[in-house]
Image (cartoon, rainbow, N blue to C red; front, top):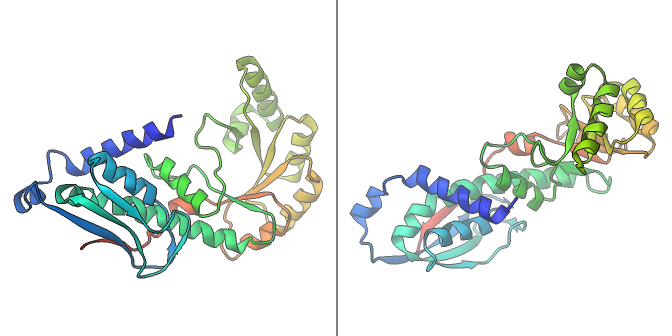
Length: 281
């Protein structure tokens, strides 16, 4: 996937959605020749994400816009900080304002939440993963925000990893059939994709290990005690991942069971946007 091209396509769609036939308020109140500047003001502590996307948005609207950035994506930000200053045609500044804020507030909220989870696991060796529980059309940016917050991106879509979950297993007939059919399919199609298998019991784990060919075992909705038993049973033969109803209060306890990854859907689907503001100079 050409991420640069994908972002440009997304930005054009956002312009069409927000501006449509034209920003008649700006057209009727501001001369087209007017120039000015705005600054992005931080109104809440957190982690910055989306400044580079903001630069891309302004530049795609008007290549003559000047963009001076003072804080990098992924850096901590404090109330009162100025992230960047943009100068150029006022028509550009006003028409890009809400789009830039929508993107940056959500991305910074995701990065801030991710950083909080990452810090909760400090010293355990366990990595935080995102999921596909993203806003349609925004996955590229939301996963980038997770990365900027210190998390690790899981599969991007259905095409870049094999992830055999409970419904696949039930429809296939058994966990053994699902894995064997997958291995055969990958060989037949000459595809080099990692296989992750969701298990629901220690017996499932034994079946997966006996077949082989799997990169990671997903322990879904396992209790802490069952997770400890599972990690001991797997004994490093494949990677381990925990998921399901894991909260800020319990996540470190799961990490201390020895799992390699913990996936948290709340990183992208239960997010409070960070408070940012674009102010005219």
